Image 1 (cartoon, rainbow, N blue to C red):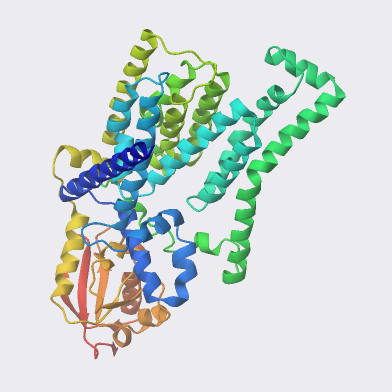
Image 2: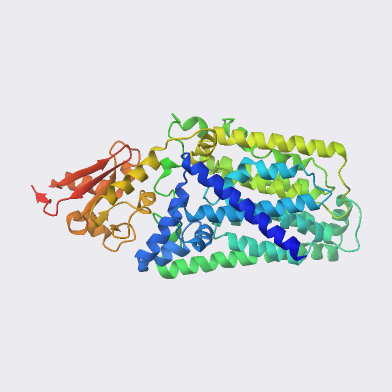
Amino acid sequence: MKSKKLLYFFSWLALSSGYLVLSYWLQQRGFFNLESYFIDYKKLVTSLYEESILRSVYFTDPFLLYLGSSLFGFPKVMGSTYFFNALVIGGLSNHLLYKTINSPKIPNFLVVYIFFSPIIIYAGISGGSLALYLLFYYLFFTLVLKYTETYSVFHLTLLSILIGVFILLNLEVLKLLLLLIPIFFFSSFHKAKGISGSFYNRASLILSNDSQRRKFFSSFFSSIFVVSFIPLMGLATFLILNKIFAGNTFYFLESYGNNWNSYSPNFVFIKDVEAYSPFIASNTPFYLISFFSVSVLTIFQIFNYGGAKAKSILMLLSILFLLSEIQEFKIEKLNIQYLSMLTGAGLASALFFRKDSLKLNRFNYILVSLFAMLGMYFQWQYFNISIQENENLYAKSLVEAVESKRVNSIQNFEQTFKKLSPGRILIDDAIFYPELTTLSKEFIWEGHFSSSYQQALQIPELYADYVVMTKSNHPLFLDDVVATAFKRLEMLQVQSDLNLLFEDDFLEIYQINPNSIVNK
């Protein structure tokens, strides 16, 4: 028994190390993730501004990624989120591999899928929150499928705890409660004791009998109550804290700088797309192509073996649910974080078998192998056609080394300030948070969490020695609060004596002459 546990532990460690090495290799070839920089930046903010602890810790989205990566401090080689993701996906992959190998009913070819699925690999090396999304969706659908087999309160309680914890990842996880309602409704017909036969026979007998009908609705609504209690109470607690500490129910959800892309919407998408309108249009096939690319395994489970109709119904509902979400929000949710729901559902379904299900025949093994290969191929195509910057960069950097202007800018920023004497920096830290993670501790900056930020924008020479702002021809120039402040001073005919120290395609670094403000 001890030898099996040790083998399990070392295989987990080996897989995690593999993801970590691959992650480091890709970063040397130009891959980067702004979300990883954001999490490390938030840790710096927490240590600098004590009055911002609530905003920078508890209400950072996603909080679970912040909390998990905090265990690793500030590794110099790469961001702490890369270590955390490698451990999470290493553990998930290890669990899936052991479950596949030890069960004669699960096709061994799924081992190849687990090792080489582009989505699983990306989750392990990306440094973002995809690893947590994938883990959540796998556990969510596994518990739902278990419930359709056992109808136990135990699995409902685990579902409630799972969703309650993961609202700290994304509050929209609560929408999955809507997905559970039809599952609970149809499951309640099968939970009735003393009634057998097909679904239609059960339904007619239950609904035509007053006593059975009361028991049916009691079971249905109690299931909903049990699974939604912890998530809804957690949300209520969150909103109460929000109201007490911020005076506004949704202040911490809507405040600037709370999310890694809240100030940088242009960096979410690749910049060489000429127009977004073809992708946003409701009649474009782009949505269906991207959607199909990551849903092959899930679609296959609808028609697959296993002897459980509930499994097919759940897979179909998950596809329809996610498709409606993406069509409603258009391009905002057409990314792998949301689409990973299909991968998690497919994996949970592929590894789920009822106790009375039969062992697979040779034809089913071949069929599973074929669809697993198709799934990996189409997933790879998804990353190639994705207009999300990190996802597209992942596909490119696997093939060849990529030179990123943003990565070069971060390195240029670091090298420039290494040559300068310590001082104060006026900067919009909602845009330049990757750069700020490279600063020496001798430098301090005036940013959104600083109590004197507004004053620094009005009279910069009193509060800062250096100024960093977005280049005027860059798309983010109008979003840059510091650049806007200097534009306002210029309009008010207040001239600032700024000495340009460095510029590239993204930013400009100036030194302020303390006697620079001259009223005309």
